[in-house]
Amino acid sequence: MTTQSSQTNIKQDVFSIVTNRIIEQLEIGKVPWRQPWKEAGPPINMLTGRPYRGINVFLLATLGYPHNLFLTLKQINELGGVVKRGEHSCPVVFWSQKEVAKEGTEEKETKRILRYYSVFNIDQCLHIPEEKIPELHLNDNVLLSTCEAVVENMPQKPKIQHKGQEAYYSPLKDVINMPKLQTFVDSEAYYTTLYHELVHATGHESRLNRDTVTKPSKPGEEAYSEEELIAQIGACFLAAQSGCSLKHFPNDVAYIQGWLSRLKGDKRLLLFASSKAQRAVDFILNNQLHDVREDIGNEETAG
Image 1 (cartoon, one colour):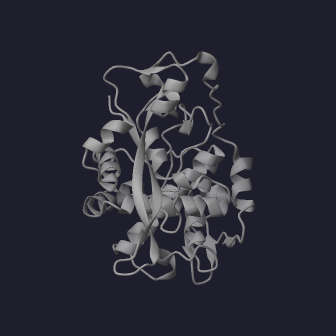
Image 2 (cartoon, one colour):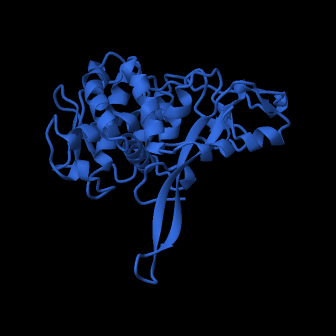
């Protein structure tokens, strides 16, 4: 059993831990940022009810447990439970910050360190009180009114037009173009495509000012691939939030090989892309309140 106390005996490279786990999924043909938790529910801490955010969603949801309810070892002990023999924990990553003296001066600066702690799924445990386990509530996959509410309630929403059979976001005009709803195979395909473009739109200089949007790039270039990854992950977050299926999700196959090669060459990419996707989703949902410990990869937020 791996516990927090044993972590000090392991050479820690949190970026590698996370990236390697995701690469394993990609290499067997699974795209972890597809919604993998429909039956199991989104990953949450069982005691606090707090949902895990950013890259932690993929780390936990892709484990394949029937219920995505997790606990720290301390919480398990407090409940009178134990971890089954031979079970291994999963990392949950977060940024911490520390005040350190600048070299050669008396001034201090904030240093940010990526850390992780360990959690276990309730299926890895024994003697967890049944009355403490929350009932799983599943979303209806066709709550199209919920999907529409996500779009309509976005702050500073860009103009959305329906001209021709192309889906794209134009940063220059700050306009999203979509094919008409009736031309999609079903309504879910329309909304997941629109979510992808909405995430792109959050990068506009008047919103989150994301340089992968504000600085022009072409297909095949690193910035272009990174922005597509951000949009893809963010759209999956939105789909999960609104109970929308991802069975028609666009572009996964087209980009998967590019993602693999980039992830292997840059172990930080996935965490930063997931964080930027989470920030985009928070903007779209006007979500100002969250636990910064779960805001993984955010280059401005630590906790």
